[in-house]
Image 1 (spheres, chains in turn blue, red):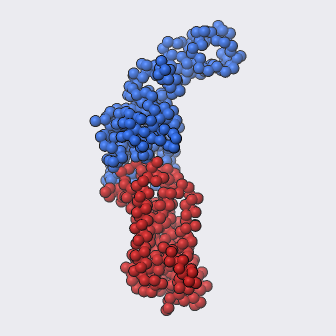
Image 2 (cartoon, one colour; image 1 turned 45 degrees about the vertical axis):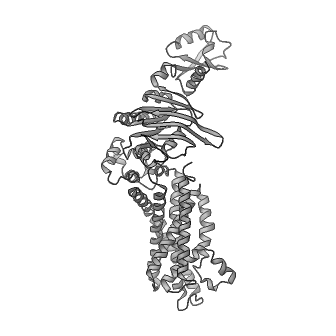
Image 3 (tube, chains in turn brown, red; image 1 turned 90 degrees about the vertical axis):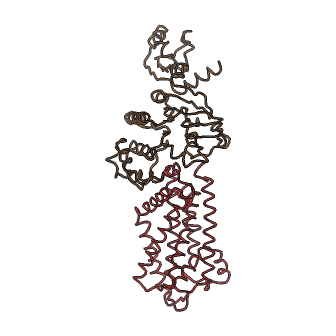
Length: 305
Length: 253
């Protein structure tokens, strides 16, 4: 039985088709990535799973239970970390976790709450009011809230959006630990790098449609994430480029040139040599891994072909 | 039924107003006392609403019920709007709490606050004067029914409102005028006929009149009628609010 199964799922907001006939299954124990740019429908999908949003048509099950008709059970099986940083300013960390635990019908849960606070480095903040915590601490409390009832399936909606590098790394470590301990993890992100680093299988949503669903290995093998973007600034505006560079150009404006290079086939040094030989004086160079835009360009190109 | 969940949400709501007692309990008691001192001083000996009952004593149950009404409404409505505006209502929506448990917890917490404020006004008023208590059962019953009704209206308003301003409008243009014009400061028999008739359309009038009967054994209308109307009002509002919550109106899109 899959941890999550979604079939024929549709959701409209006024004229926007937010989710368009989505079908996918997440297996138990899997580390699943849900990727897409802002507005792709990732949060709508998560919200339907969590019961925050009502579906128009289709079925969504968590461990075989319907999220609409059997919501009490599915909400006990799911732990959701929402994207927005929200907290109740009336209470301290320990109170928040005890209250959250009580909502799930758990009366005596202090041992687990203490363990969770220790794992998320919140123990010394147990008596601190939520208002007094830093953004990173608040996010950790939100994760503890999602885990307070020991859910089998953990859904994290962009957990690292807007967090600093150090916290991002510690969150990654913690999520990996949850996965090792047997939780099914569903992670939404718009960072390709994050999905690459953590997930076994990846679904890509764009404009409410599922545009790819495959293992990370297979997506990479098909070219997803195999390119890098190189932005070059030259002293003078460049004229027409040599023929062998032209297919790699994504954008050329004045003295700015943006190229998309294959990580294994194209050498950055060779490209720079070609430009220098062409008379260009390079004053700045910026390299980035492929972002989602590149992935969509690649996917669209492939779908057309 | 998720009884632990229901109790937890109720406890959280009581704890919430318990953390700001100055605002939620002490301030309304002081406000009611100011009314008592000022109105009692001005009208004592000049107005006799009920035979054999001084104006100050007549005023006390009215002020108690007005405080119960306003505070029961404020409790559920302000808690809900705060949770909605800050977004933390999400953490309740993600749990297995049903719409009925959610409703009951908010209303019961409103009852606790309403009753505590009502008792607070009564205890402080005892410092100034003696107050007869003819039918304590009626007093408790009306206090419970009225605070539950206003707790329900508060849930409705809190779910409907999207910003504090809308809630303030609800409070200032509906709850406050209806509670002031319900016979807190006068017997409706002292009003011209037109206003007497109009008062019968104000549900708060029945709450105050039945409640006053519990103290003096005298009322403007038959207490059984007040009891019936207040109960009916509570039942109808409960039905509407539960339907709203079940539909996910403004909570689940």
